[in-house]
Figure (cartoon, rainbow, N blue to C red):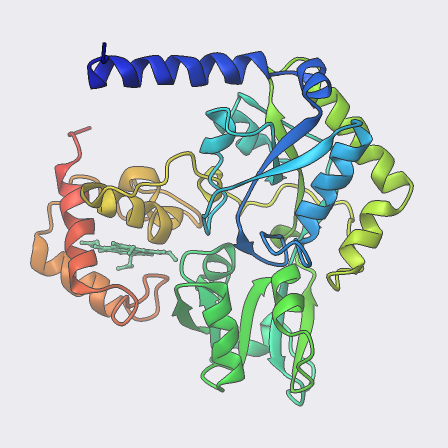
Length: 357
Ligand code: HEC
């Protein structure tokens, strides 16, 4: 007898759920013999499915598994942001690179993040012959940043000309092509992209506000796991094995103390990754606009009072003009050339279709 499809799916979902919960916890992982780690297959120098160059977070995760007496099994989830949904849903037990940050903890109370193994910082990439440049020297100059990244928001409130790009790699390429005097990126990525390039140099930016500590994340409900991972990270740092791993990726100043950064938002680590086209506006808004305009466009955001866009009443023409052309001498950039007109439309429809608040 064949089960109706719906029932069969429900049975499958139930079986998958049952399996996930059976395998939860340190004891179960030890019995099973492997720890599952969620990571992006194409995010070097952090992670990669190329076993010859797996990335420093994957290598550290493998060392952590070894400390637990088990092997590491990778679960690849393609994402350019740190989508923690697979961890919540039980696809793995370990997720590297989460911020040790109060707001992140409050936003994701189901996650326990270990002691920090690394401090995320930023760097400027410039031409090797550019002389010594700091952010202050970049006044009036074109600086390439990733759209809506921490770096973008940071420079938006300084007198530089922002060159916006979809990815940090594209921002980096802008310097290589002389479209910008500098690119402002994650430090580890800057070092990685500039390797072997004698024509470029990487200058660490030491502003405290741009640094934040990261650790390894697990689900709180998995018994014994958070403590075991935390202790493993501690041992790997104390023995210097973690630092050796980072050094292979060109990262020598692995960890220093850092306070919480005002620029890190929980949205850098999102739960949902919308593939559904109806959801395109929501997803785009959270990537490109929410850091300033607030989640769901409620206003506020980094840097003080910003226009509320939720249930926008200015009309399509005004909205389109603002987004397309930006507003000179304000943090509101021109999105022409970065977003397509369809994407601006999707943003507008998303904002105007939200329930009234
Ligand atoms: C770096 C911060 C920043 C980002 C990112 C940003 N905005 Fe803005 N936006 C502002 C500021 C500041 C203003 C107010 C400008 C002014 O003073 O007129 C503004 C104004 C606007 C306005 C005008 C509202 C009105 O009718 O007066 C619209 C519409 C808008 N933004 C849409 C967007 C959309 C859509 C995105 C994402 C694609 C976005 N913004 C991303 C900072 C930002």
